[in-house]
Image (tube, rainbow, N blue to C red):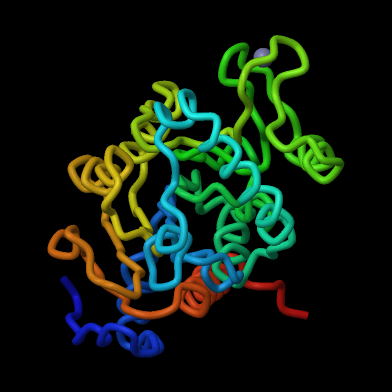
Length: 276
Ligand code: ZN
């Protein structure tokens, strides 16, 4: 580990990442050709989307349903859709921040191969990462899916129905229950999604772990898979994780400024503008 800093006290403001830890990260990333980013809620808090597990986060106010509860309990479905009706417009209005944009730039210049994300907010694609290079491990909030027949809709199509008074929308093909195309507690990740993520991790030469508490398995194993395949691992986080000891560099602080500095350095070195 290149650097150890004291962690911020609980409830305290996040200190800016130190220049020396960012310099170490840049030195480490130099000459890397197949960078993979693994992102969690922490990259999107700078876009105003609350961290599920943080203080005041969604989980503190309303525990997410399990899949069994969702299927079996009409009241759970009613509460879910009421929450969705009020909260989705805020999520949909969120804009990518400097961290998302930096990763999109890295892909544009051919240095970043994939973004593996635990987020369901779609902000990587909004920033410019190719949809086929963003692997959404926990699904997306921007699609709605029928649990029975699998048909999907754009989230706004269902939002219009909610706003028109359809309290618990059902599938207009088979009558099955609908919900967002996201992974709930008790549900396995789709096999194909996980296999693609594992392949991307194995093929990387640097994994940037950004804003993930690395708690939720199996996604949290991906940095370990990258490490065992020979990649360097950089952790950019505001709080400690169980994988800190395996990191080749640890940057403690907000992700936006750190990723901006990294990308500017890498792009500046490899894609210098032609001298006039
Ligand atoms: Zn259906």
